[in-house]
Image 1 (tube, one colour):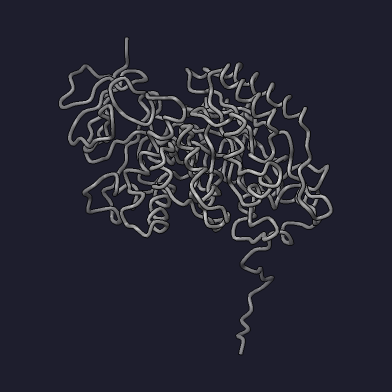
Image 2 (image 1 turned 120 degrees about the horizontal axis):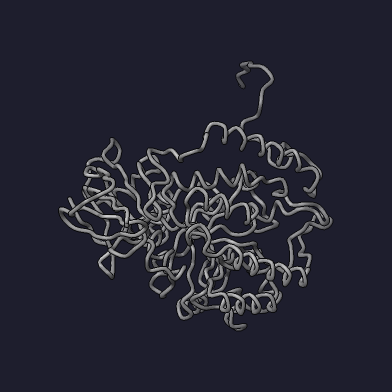
Length: 488
C-alpha cells in the first residue's frame, strides 16, 4: 500500500506538459516516490502532511556538472594569472612528469561526503559527478546512502597534461585510455539502477584535447550499447582551442562533427571558446550552428568561467541556435541558485540587454534543461507521475520580500539557506539545513585536515618543487605579531 504525503503549497511551480506554471494555494500529493496529484483540497487518507502554505514548492535542481572532493586544488588557482596557459588555471596544477596529481590524497569519506551534504543543502536533487574527483565507487555509496540521485563513473582519456622542463605537454597513453573505458563500462554495469534506481552511469571522455579520435568513437559506441549519455569538457580554454587547431586544423566542435562525435547524447561542459567568441579570432557562427543542429547539450558553469575572466557569449545566443542549455556548479560553491543568478546577470551584460537570460530561462536550464540532457522527462518538473524530487523554499524574509514573481524572487534574491526541505523520491533528505546522520562540525574539521594533507604534498608533484606558500601565496600576508607601521 502506498505511503501518501500531502504538501499544502502556498505557491507551486508545476509543469503543464509544456512549461513551468505557477499555482497558488494548492495541494501536492506524493505517493511513495512519485507525485500523485496536484490541485485544491486533496482527499485523504494521508500518512504525513507538510505545511508549506507560506512557502514556495519547486522542482529540485538538476546539477549537470560537478567534481566531488575538497576543491582545495581549484581554490589555489582562483584569482591567479597564467598567461603562458592563456589563463587556463585548471592546467596550472598539472603535475611534473612521473609525479602523482594533486588529488591523489583526496579522501572520498571526507571530501566526497562533504560534497554530498553541500549539494543536498543547496537543493540539488539530481547530480552528475565527473570521474576525476573522488573514487566513483565510494561516491556511488555516499550519494546512494544519503538519498541523492546521481550519474557517475570513472573518467577516460588518452593523455594527461604534465609539465616537462617548465613546459606543458601531453603524455599520450592511448592503450590506458581504452582500458579506462572498459573499466567505466564495467562500473556502469555494476552500479546502474542501485539504491532504488537513483544511481546511474554516464561515460566521461574527459577533455577535448586529451582524447584520441579512436577513444571518442569507442566511447560513443559504448554509450549507445549501454543506453547512456556522454559528458566532457570541451571548447573550455584558449589553450585547448590552439592545441586542437594545431593538431587538426579545426576547432574542437568542428573536429567532433567531422568524426561523428556530436549528437543529442553528448553534454559539453563550459564551451565558451567557439567561433564568434572575440577571444578566438575566429569569426562566424559555424560552431554554434553545429551544436544546435546535432542537438548537443551545453552545461554552463558560470562561476568557473567567470572567475577565469571569460564569458559565455551568450546564454541567449546558444539558446536561439537550438542548443539545450543546462547548469552546473563545477568545483565550488555548489550552489545552483548562485549559478542561476550569475548566468542571468552576465547574460544581460554580454547582450547589453536587461531582458536577456531572464530568470525563467535560467531556472529552466537548472531544471528541465538538465533533465532533458539525461533523457528524463520525470525529473526537473512537478506533475502527476513525475518523481517526487522537490524543494520547499522560504522567501518570506528581509531581502527577498516583498514577493511577486517567485522564479524571479528566487533567482535574484534566493540562497540555499532559504531551502527548508529537500525531498528525493518522496523521502525527506534534508530539513532546515540539516542532513540526517551527519555531524557537520566534525565533517568540516576533517575536511580541513584532509586539505592540509593535500597542500603539504605540493612539493612532490609541482614542477617548481615549491610549497603552497610559493605556488599560491596568501593575499593577506601573515604577521608573527601585531605591529602598526604607517607608511609615509
